[in-house]
Structures are given as structure tokens and as C-alpha cells.
Image (cartoon, rainbow, N blue to C red; front, side):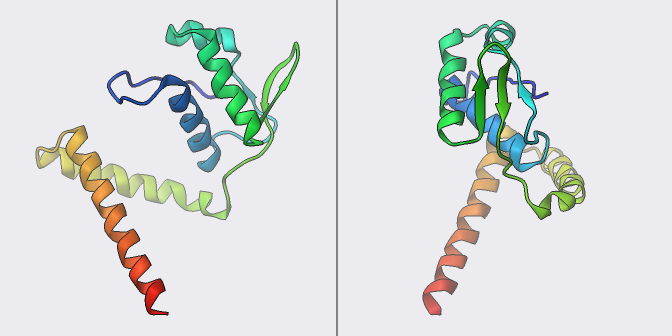
Length: 135
């Protein structure tokens, strides 16, 4: 079962953080079709947030077709976002952990690491877009 956490410094609404955590768990194969999400009461108690915030996140997941509420039973995953690339996640995760260790050793903090990563994604997207235009 997924264990939610909130980053109060992120500026991202709590319900959006919950949605993103479920999506990420689905992409990484940590949640599978049929898995039960924690109850609204469990999440709101553990994170000290309003139950309506959790309900809002769960309703959005239902709207996206990723979860379904079963009255009196709970909310369950109805669709996965993982694919055949899940097998590569372990090796990539190890590579990334090594890279993060190097980044920390070079003195980068979380914000610097995130900025560097986002810049690399942006540059890759630019290159991909230019390659597509050339076709």
C-alpha cells in the first residue's frame, strides 16, 4: 500500500501532491490494478490534512479512470500506468542514486539538483522537437 507524504515547501496543493504520488507509484509498478488505496481517514490522520483534500484527490483519480471507490470497502486502483520499461527501473534507479551521491559530493542541494534535472529534461525536449521539425 502507498504511504503518502507532503512537501509543505513545494507550493503545490496537497491534493495535487497526493494525485502525483499515486501516478508515480502506478508508473513505477508500485501500485497495481486492484490494490487498495489508504482510506480517507487514514490519509487525513497521517498527514494532518482535511479529509476533503483527500476526497478531492481520490475523485480526480476516479475521473482519470485510475481508481474507483467501492462504498463501504475503499478506493481501489483500476488502471496501471506502468509498461514494459518497469524492468529497467531497478538499474536506472541505481544509476540515479549514484549520480545523486556525486551531486551531493559536489555541494548541490535539493533545489540545485532539481534545477539541473529540469534543465536536462528541457534541453532533451528541445532537441527532440528540433529533430521532429527536421523530418
